[in-house]
Image (tube, rainbow, N blue to C red; front, top):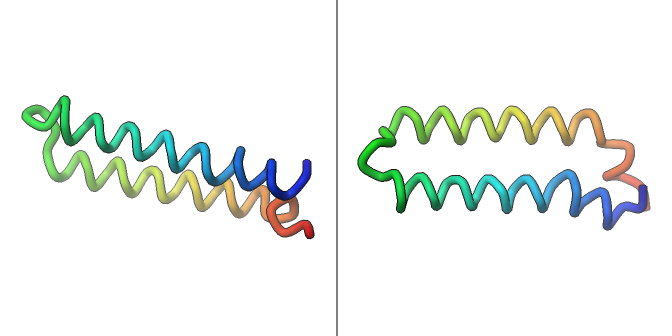
Length: 63
């Protein structure tokens, strides 16, 4: 896979999806979502993104 496409698929799209979920959680579900749940969501996203970057590092590092 070409580097720009790999960046889009493995980094940009997951970040946009996380941002959409985070904004939805803060706006639509703000009364039913606690701070602990938001922290867990952010931590889970960080772990998943770290795993993606680690497993796809060869595709992301291509010049």
